[in-house]
Image 1 (cartoon, helix red, strand yellow):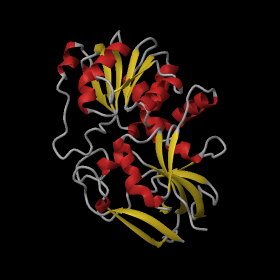
Image 2 (cartoon, rainbow, N blue to C red):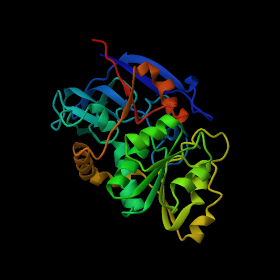
Image 3 (tube, rainbow, N blue to C red):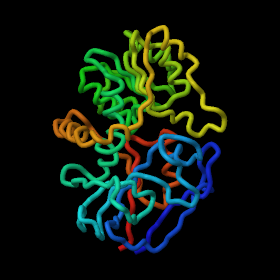
Length: 335
């Protein structure tokens, strides 16, 4: 069976280009004892992938040159030499950007396509959903009646953060780029307000939408947006640092918050989160979120692009703000 793969060819400087990738088609590996072979059906595309391309110290080892690009994915077991998985099982794992994966089953778990579409296990019921759940509830600690602001609010993580904050009784304001995304936040996801950073002054928009200030800020973008929100925080505010997509393709040093003294004045707290720290509680979180989906309290949206050949261009949609909801690559297989 042919395996279509995207390998990291070189480390990018600034935005990744087609030169940073190498495409190849090879025969799929043989399955060894304890392993499974998976026909990959959907691949998760996430901003974190840009950081994994750098040869620098982080919370996870960088992808090496000539390795298959790291990515979470879901698919079907087509061969099994493992006691824990059977042919036909639908599974999630870090299978990479390829159409067929052989895995030792570490970190692999079964998913139920009867409960939700497979691609949803890469979004609300996958890593973005877990990031939103634990980042907001465990680190942001929102209380009913507080004002929660989230940047990148129409993306995979931000859209879930805002909805969970609403479930917990908070006033929620999203920061997003463009009228269409802001309308989506308010009209479909139930946010109380939205600030269109592309078409209005962010500070003016925040003052209008958050007249009582900001109690929790969930940051996915960093840069000037983080700096501006810091001027609006309340006493004992919590700032959750989840990502900084505005900085990932910088060719110069990352821009840190110039307004950090606002943390001192307001006795506020800024804390980073990495979703893997909560791995032992993923099951509990997924169960609660699945319940919210069934109750109509939590809506999920996936932005699906078809064709593994489109990977380099599709990945860049994340950094251009072109995706609505969770960006997912659908893999087509030759029959």
